[in-house]
Image (cartoon, rainbow, N blue to C red; front, side, top):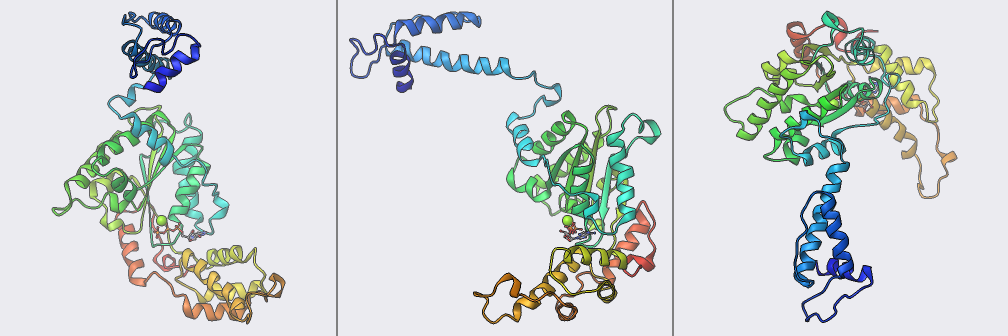
Length: 389
Ligand SMILES: Nc1ncnc2c1ncn2[C@@H]1O[C@H](COP(=O)(O)OP(=O)(O)OP(=O)(O)O)[C@@H](O)[C@H]1O
Ligand SMILES: [Mg+2]
């Protein structure tokens, strides 16, 4: 504070420190006059105090007040939907949860044609042409992507962000629960308020089961309150015609979802293991930038061999195979990039022995059963385990 007062006096180049005691700093009367006229300008009455430290402090406070007042005046008028919402939380959501550029497009996803076209129909079209999707054609409030781990659910979520032109909010349960311990439910309220104001918007919740698992007796009070707030807010989604909002959840444990949350996710889409064609496509893409000696027939054979592998498993397989040539190098420090041999079919054969499918057939049966009970689209059990061609 003393600094500020000093600067006030010094800045005006006038009678600073004239006749002041050790702890007293006088302020230029010129500066005082300016502050007084500014105060009058915003409707405040000037405060009279002796031209000493006391007066300096008074005016320093007045300047702070003026700066704040100017800030308020230059800020855009606040949206009424932000009533009772902590501005800090709004800022935090805008900075940390709004995901602007995942940069993934539909072409980056191998296979899953049915899932892609369904998501486009449910999410992307209504966001792009709200005038056509009204009334009965109005979009659903919630979409659930479920299926075995590593099949591209998170990938689809990120693609929606790129393709829908909507503000994309990407959150996970852990982020809501940990970062704002004890403030979770206020955070949820703030999240939905920001999403409403920035509509059209998509709220993507990865691993939604951990946020909205069945409400049981043992869970903590805080997480129960967060869940309740979530359910209340989800009910409000789509209530106002010009607020285009969609909730997209992804999970590999759909059976653990709270039934009230399940009801709110109107469309439930099964994301299966990749079929033969998708596995081929994935392996080809992954090898695209690498030196290799595989023919299309080799890739076909590998894809046949790895029935039941998820997309993530295929990626792990290719990564393992790509290490094959490196293992034969004796002196890794002195080898040139050109000295590394291309990846061969044998590398893949070795890798298949090491990288196993991470999803069991029993797990697939559980998903198929859940889908037949709650899913929006039927799946063929013969192809659901990645056996399709
Ligand atoms: N269909 C696919 N096309 C392209 N890559 C895929 C596909 N499926 C999986 N992958 C690869 O596997 C990785 C994991 O995928 P993703 O994170 O989307 O899985 P997930 O379904 O969300 O799994 P989890 O349920 O464990 O969260 C991706 O980074 C991607 O490299
Ligand atoms: Mg995921």
